[in-house]
Length: 448
Image (cartoon, rainbow, N blue to C red):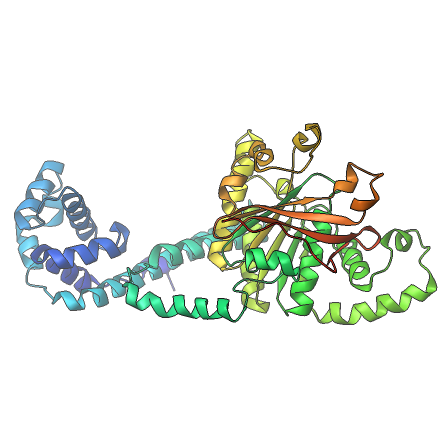
């Protein structure tokens, strides 16, 4: 089969109906212009006429044969579209405004098929070019597919009466104390956030050695084992094996330092075997690609969701991700990465938890070393892009002689776009690299 000889998917009769109806009826024109783009038309002449219609419509100029003819003449393309004869022919192809949406869907479908055909040709060329790896090509395909879906899916304007049932369903869940998001298993934190919400970018930030990874892994264990959630962890700092040891020691509650030195007491080995069972059955998945690019992360996340399901993504940590742009300014690169992570969260409809390093600013403050939102501002637009910002803080790092703060961690919710702020205290068991609920958790009064 010679692909060059095949006529691409198109519906010229539908194009004529849509243009004719739009020229004769302003209401139809409003629907068409709000639903279609120039490239949805296969015919070159029809594309030019549609582009002219959009331009006139945006200038509040009536869309009819006369105004379109005059505009096409000014642009010097009147003859190329068939002059007035073709425009009057279009008026013979009319439909009632109630049917116009049906015809726009046909055109969108044909345009989507043409886009897929173009993408297929590009993919074949890429496979023979030897310039891209197989994974690069897959990532490119994923991006193109997403663009096709995004460009060809129109979010309809909906009347409030149609949205109310969904709103009351959420209110009913609130009344039943059902978390609308993915629970972390840390009860007071979940009270503040109502769980980790789908489409949210959640930044978990802190200075080194505060326990960011331990907190994220503890939340992952709780979500996967207690609530049967599917969790995908992108570990850019540690290998899969190192991360697995952490998960195993945390769940078994055995001393990780002694394990690595080969000094673990024999009585603790059965604990490891006991913990291995639930872990092997859990929905935790790990990828340790160093410096992973956002395109690869997105492709792997989409594949994960389609094959196994996906409820939560964790990135450890944001600053180690590969550059999205060729910009030499690392602050701008970090901003681009955080925006892209937010985009993946929205596209896949899952919470995206990204760990982030902080500058030395907290250590340079005298007295109170607790992190503040301003400490994130040196890291590009992270604060701006994030829906939720949590800081992991352990006072014992700075006050080693204070017995009252040993083993106590604070999770400080300093930003929450759709909820209160607050601080919750947790137990941090350093030997297990594990966070747990405290017997009696203390939390500041949430503030909206």
